[in-house]
Amino acid sequence: MGSLLSNSILKPCDGFWNDPRWNTTEAKVGDPAIAHVAEAIFTPMVAFGKWGVFDLQGAIIRDATDYKGPQSEDLVQIPQMPCALGDVIDRGTSNVIFGGRINLYYGHFLFETLPRLWSIARHGLAGRKILVQAQWPMDQWFDRHFVQVFLSALGIERSDIIQCTQPEIYHDVEIPLPCLRQNAWVHSQATRDLFVKIGSRILEGIPERPVENPVYISKTKLPHKISGIINEIEIENILRAAGVDIVYPESMSLKDQLVLFRDRKTILGTVGSAFHSAGFAQSRARQVMVAHGARVNPNYGLLDIAFNSRTEYYYTDLIVEAGKTSDTGYALHCKDTRAVAESLLRLVA
Image (tube, rainbow, N blue to C red; front, side, top):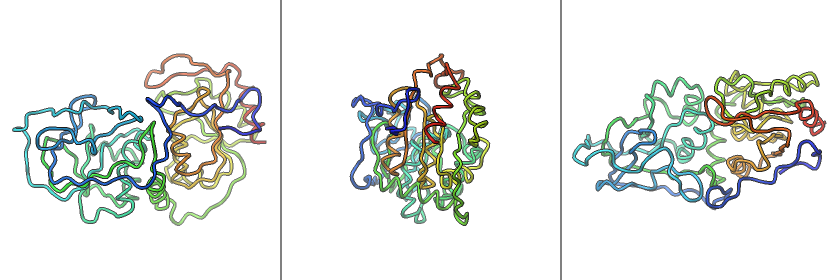
């Protein structure tokens, strides 16, 4: 998990969360399956309510249901029909590919939306529409720049998308199973093909320019209060004074983020979804991350498996939990920012 260059302040993490009931980092053999159903009922997404994809008798179709963890824990839904079968309409729409559920938070989009699109990355839409479920109207999706960029890179335009807005029967539906399940497993080749297809389209025509100087990915300007160090700005300032470049992903284009992961030799930061972008760039950078504890969320391990990443995870007793944030996650406090910053500098010296 860590480098032999670690020190008494920053210690190599012990691995990933490893309770097999809830968390694994399993590498699946081969490609995910692709299911085909002659007819299915699709109902609109209602977060934490009753919705899903059902057969004509109203039973949930598991291949079209999202789960997390090795025990197939339901994600943001009660997998039950939300209405009577007699309320379902049938307009005869057919020959569609199921694109799953749209999540507009970057890291969740990568783990909960993209994984069903691996088949499209390989074979395209082949004249079909893509059918999706989302709790937000489509206009709101495309306000998130990364959604438009990722879908366009896969050859998916807005006119190709059908959003389920009422209980309806669709015919001749292809259902690719995910290539990646959070906290559980990864089909490495399918995941690589998906991420590389997207990344190569985004980076097309941009020459490589390797940069030796290390860069630190900061969370200090994030608009949402996710898990992070509340006094991270002090670490940032010490690193900047020592010559480390500082970047803020939320102020960069997606293209510039991928260029950073492709061209930089050493990338530092605290664990966060910005590091998931490394896969799109086929990054060979040394990635040095400070975790929130001695064990790391297995989602990082899953992408490490898929991309054979050069990642190192460290933790320190100097970073402690300080309570819930106003949005999601936990606020952390660093009791000695200089010690942590100087330890990072020694790691990359």
